[in-house]
Structure formats: C-alpha cells, structure tokens
Image (cartoon, rainbow, N blue to C red; front, side, top):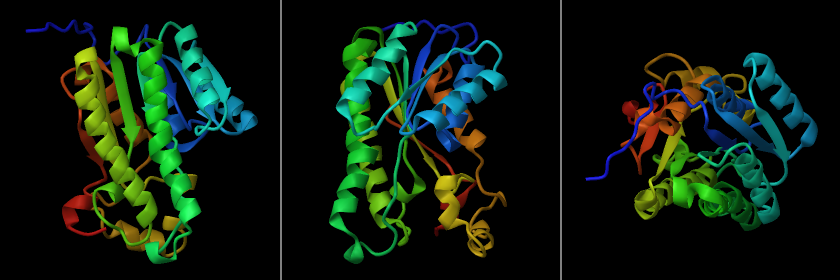
Amino acid sequence: MTETTVHPNPSDLTGKSALVTGASRGIGLAIATELARRGAAVVITGRKPEPLEEAAAGIRTAVAGATVTACPGNTGDETHRGEAVAAAVAQGGIHILVNNTGINPVFGPLMDADLGAVRKIFDTNVVAALGFVQEAFHAGMRDSGGAVVNLASVAGIRSSGVIAAYGASKAALIRLTSELAWELGPNQIRVNAIAPAIVRTKFATDLIAGENEARALKGYPLGRLGEPEDIARAAAFLASDEASWITGETLTVDGGALSTGSM
C-alpha cells in the first residue's frame, strides 16, 4: 500500500506553486486570491494585460506578502500555455492547475447555433484545458504529482435549454476530468472538477439581468445565488491535502439547485 505524506495543516498551501487560468476577474480571481491566502505562489492568466495586472495587484493588496505573477495570453495558444506553466515552474514547480477559462458566445437552441462558435466553445472550454494539463504534466507533475481542478458547470450535468452548447462543452470537461483522473492517478496527480450553478459574475450577467434574477432564485433552496468566494473555497479544498484521496469527482456547488429537479 502506498503511503501519502500529509501536511500537518492539510489546508495550508505554503510552498506550492499554482496556475489559475482566466483569473483577471470573477471566479478565477477569487480562486487565485484564496490559493494565495493559503500560502501558494500564484500565476494568473487572462487575455488582456492591463486587467490582469490589476488583478495581480488586487491579490497582493488582499494578501500581504503574496507571490503573484501575471501571464497574459490566449488560452487557445499553445505557446502561451507553455509560457504560463513555465512561469509557475519558475516559482518553485507546478503543483496546482486550475482550468477556469470558459466562454459562451452562443445562447439558445442548438438548431440555430453557429457551428464555428460551437467549435470555439469546445476549443476553449475543453481542448485548451487538456492542453494545460499536458503542459503541466510534462513540466513536473509527472514526477512530483499535483492537483488539477477543472471548472465545469451544472449545465454540464442537466440540460437548461438556454446555454446548450456551453453545457455540452462542460459535460465533455466533466468526462475529461474522469478520464484524466484514471490516467494520471499512478503519477499521484489528482484531477477533479467543480460544477457551479449561477454565480454573481460578469459572465452570468445575461442570465440574471432584470426579472431573470428573481426567476432564477426560485430554483435555489438556499435562497441566494453563488458568490465567487463560494467556488474559490471549494477549489482550494480540492487543491489541498484535505482532498488527498479524492480524484475523478465533480463537486456540485449550486445552492441546492439540482436538488429541485429543474434548472
């Protein structure tokens, strides 16, 4: 039986280096901040340099002494993925990877969906996530182990009829999570996913605009929508030694939405 050494404080990430994609705002920024708060050195990515630098500065303000590196670029660019992972390695290795980047330019029925846009959704939400895992694996996780957290969605578990293409991509990401957990387990790499419901971010603006918010709230037994910090704490848990025997799982963080039987 393989023995696992667990830190005396399993939630402490001191000495770990983490890469969080799509972290200039919203859930990604909250996750990066929480990882830094727990002691990890953090690399954050985003397409636009200025907002990303502002996010990095915000983390340093929120967490005294935090080590934060901004690495701007497009998630779909293989060169950028390599540079981002290399930036994490330069901070002491690559121990934690959070695939948070996600897009949804397509709303409504699949029969009306532009196939080019659908391809872009899958390329960004699924293929690029796999690309980051491959980079992290070859850059150090293969030998030292680590934790991967993929940001999926409840839309990948139950059909919504509104964000169908996005939901299909997140279902694929959930399946990818399971496959990677099986493949990478022997390397002591844990791979899990989080499936949030609606979280108050700019990304969810259209879903909760106007009367949509009151309508959405009716489906949440806890009586509120999610906040980025709700997801951040779940991600930090899965990235830490607190979850040292958890892999291949998708943690639903949804305020009870799926328990209602509808979305």
